[in-house]
Image (tube, rainbow, N blue to C red; front, side, top):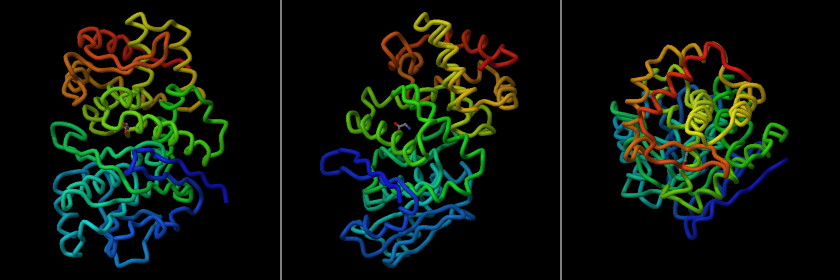
Length: 347
Ligand code: GLY
C-alpha cells in the first residue's frame, strides 16, 4: 500500500500528516496516550467512517456552511459535557473543511484546549484545511472571523474517502492544488493522487513550520483567496471555496498585470494552468461570477480580516509570489470591473 508521512515541524507540537489508502484505520495509533474517551464530529450522510476503539460518542452535523457557526460549537460542547470529555481526551474530526474547522475550534475551546485529530475526507481538506491549525466558525459579518490557531495531533488523509467524492468537491480541491502549483511551480497533475496530496501537504507543512501564526510567509497560502472569500460571501456560497479560489487566482494575475508586476505571458500562463490544465472555472461558473456587483465585492474584501490599510493580496511578480499590503481599493475596483468585463475567459 502506497503511504506517505509528512511532519509539520512545530517543536513539541509537531505532528504527522499520513496520506494513503486505508490510513483512517490507523486512528488508534495516533490517539494521545492520555485519551480514555473520544468524540467523533462528522457530517450526516457521509459515506465514510472513522471510529476509534476507545469509548466514543458521535455527533453528526448537517452538511453545508450554515453548520459552521457558534451555535454548532455550543451544541458540540454540550455533547462533550454529556459524554464526560476531559482535557486529556480527544476530538476526532471526520469530514471536509467545514467539519475540521468547527470541530477543531470546539476542541480549542473545550477546557481551553483539548487534543484533536483531523481525518479529512475531501481533497480540499487533505491538501489545505486540515493542516496548519487554523480553526474557525463564521458569523453573519464574515467567514472564519471567530477562530483560533490550534494544531491537530495528527492528520490522516485516507484516499479511500475520495472515491465517493462528488465532482464539485473534487474541483474544489483542485482549486487549492492549482494554488500550490503557483507557490511551488510543481507539475502536480502528473503525480498519483497520493503523491499529489503528499506534495501539497509538504509545501503547506514547510510554510506553516516557518510562520505558524501568519506573521508573513504563511499568507502566501492565501493566493487567490482575497477575491475568493468575497465571491463566496457576496454570491451566497453558490460557488464553493475551491471554485472561488480558481477565479481568485485568475484575478490575482489580472491585478498583478494592472500593477505592472507581470507581463501578458504570465497572465496567459495562469489561464492555461487554471482553465486548460486543471479544468477549472467553467463558462457557467464564470457567468455566475460576472453577475456579482464589483462594488459589493470590493466592500466585502475591505471587511476581510486580513485587510490592513487598503487591501492585502498575494501577487505574482518577477521574483515570484509576494504578500502585498495596502493595495488601493480604487485600483482593485477598476481592475475587477475590467476582469469581470470579459465575456469569455481564455485558456
Ligand atoms: N488555508 C490557508 C492557511 O492555512 O494558512
